Image (tube, rainbow, N blue to C red; front, top):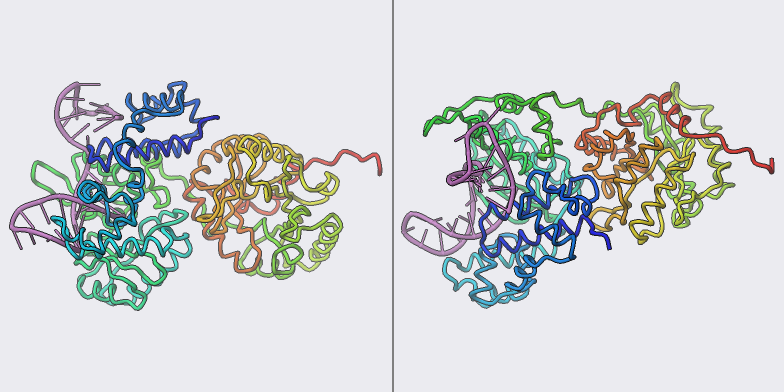
Length: 587
DNA sequence: GCCGTTTTCGGCCCGACTGTTTTCAGTCG
C-alpha cells in the first residue's frame, strides 16, 4: 500500500495537536504544523521524497522530522506518535475543535474533571463543574455551551460566494455611515480561498465608538461575540462570523495588509522587517533603534511593500508560497482580469440537463460582451443528465449550424460535447462522431470509487485520445459535500501538457476544480487553462468572475487561459489537437 | 524543532478581547 500524501499530512497535524495539548514549546508545534502545510503544496511523490531522503532538502524539514517521516514511510507507523496517543484519550482531539476552547483548557478539563469528549464537556458546563474551576466562571461555561451549539448547528465553513454575499451585505451597511472613510473586505475572502470560516472587514474612521455600536446593532446580527473599541465580532443570521477592525485612516494600509493575511505571509513579512531593522504590525511599519520606534508612513499597501524592498504583491498571492521571494527581484506578472475573458466553452442546453436553448445562451453571452461560445451537452452515458445519443448529438450539430446563420456580428459558435470518460478510459462516442465536432471536452461522471491508479490511467488514456481538447472538473469534488476522487493530478497534468490538452478551472462555486494550488506548476509545464462555469442556466455565467479570482490566485495571466484568446486562436488550438479520423472501411 | 549576510545557540510575529482577576492567562487571527 503506497504512502499517500494525506496520510503524512494527517500524521504531522496530529502530532502538532497532541503537542499543543501537552503544552509543548510553541515553536516545536509550529515546526510540525508547518511541515504538514509544506507537504500540501510540495510536488512529486511524497513516499519517494521521504525514502530518498530528499525531504531533508526542503526548508522546514530538519533532522527530527526527516527521521520520523522515514520511520513512518518504512514501517507504516511511528513510535513517537503512538507514545503521544497513549498519553491522552483520542477524543480530546474533538474537544480541541470547540471554538474558544484551546489546548490549555482541554488539558485542565481532562486533568481536573476527567473530561474526554464534547458531550462530557457540555454536561460539566451544565452542572456547574466548569464554573467552579479556578479562573473560570459562569460566563466561561455559558460561552462554551454556545460554541458547541453553534459548532453543531452551523457548517464550520461557508462557500466563497455565500460568505462574500454575507460580508458584502454588512460592508454595504457600514459604508453608508458618514463616519466610515474607507472600508474593505479583507481576510481569506480578499485572498480568494475556496471556503472560509469568517469574514474580516477593515475600516477607517475618526469615530470608532459610533461605527462599532452600529456594527453590533445591525439587523442581520444574531450574536455579538466581542464588542471592543478597535475590534468587534458578530455572528450574522445564517451562522457566519463577521469581524470588524477599526483604525485611524493613516493606519488603514497597515491594517488592511495585516488582516488580509494569510497568516504565513504575515509571519514572513514580519521576519523580513525584523531583519531589516524594522517592525510591522496592523498598527504600522516602524524603524526600530533600541527602544525608539519611528513610524514609516505608507499611503497604501504598495508603499508598504516598497518600504520592505518588495514589489507589490496582489492579495490573491499572499500565502507565503514563493510570492515574497518573487517580489524581491521582479514585478508580479500581470494576472488575468475579468476584462480579458472573451468566451465560455462549457455549457449545457435543454437538450441534456441545462435549461436554455442555444439561441438564449448565445444572446446572453453576447450581451455580456463575449465573442464566442462553446455548446457542450452531456454524452450518452450520462443518463442521469439526459445525455445525447449519436442521433441527438448530430441533430444538435444541425441546430448549431442553423443558429450560425443568425449570430451577432463577429460572434463565433463552437460545437462541442462534454464526453464521458468511461470506466476503461474509452470515450463515449466513436471517433467518427467526435471528429465532426469543433471540440471535445472529456470528463468523469461515473465510477468515482476506482483506485487512484485506475482512475489516473483512465483519465490519462482519455487525454491521449486524438479528439480530446479539454479535461473538465479534473477531481470531481463537490466542496463541503463530496471529496475528490482518488487521482494523481501531477501525472494528469503531465499528460495534459504532453498531449496539449487544456485543463478546466470549473468555476462553479461548489467545484472550483482543479484547485488553485495546482495551477502555478501546471502553467509552468505548458498546460492551458480554461475557465468555465459549466453553465446549466443563464445565471451560472456569473460564476466566471469567481473563476478569474481563483485563477489569479493560481498565478495565471490572460495568455495562460484559453477563454482569453480570440476565437481564431481558440479554433486553431482545437484544430491542432483534433486529428482527422482514420478512413472507415464501411464508407 | 528549525535555522543562520548578526548567530551552530538563542532566537523564533504581534496585538485585541474576554473573563476572571486586580495584573494576567487563554484564545484567536
